[in-house]
Length: 133
Image (cartoon, rainbow, N blue to C red; front, side, top):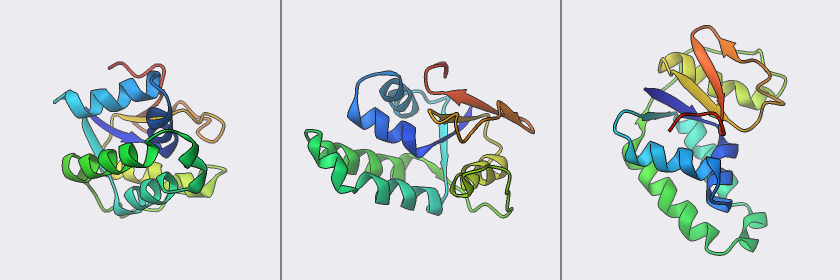
């Protein structure tokens, strides 16, 4: 099963031990789950996780660097070759572009304000709470 992970799920996984952390654990431990990334999304992960506001969380940066290193090794990287412009938050369209190009089964997000659709073509959107790990 191929998945694309919205940045907010990654952040939440590093801040608390709730549903997002279970999703991240499943990505690392379940051989049936293949995380798909693009350089653009990986750069966003890196930039967002380096923000000073996360320094209030104990050992956040150590965990973030570890997770980024593991993702760079274990994820499958794609270079999306299509442009999609359907989401209100234009910066989130890159997640749809990647999802379609890699033929992802799920785009996992905690942000249904911006991802306010449940399916796009064959791609299903899964809230981090509902993703079956």
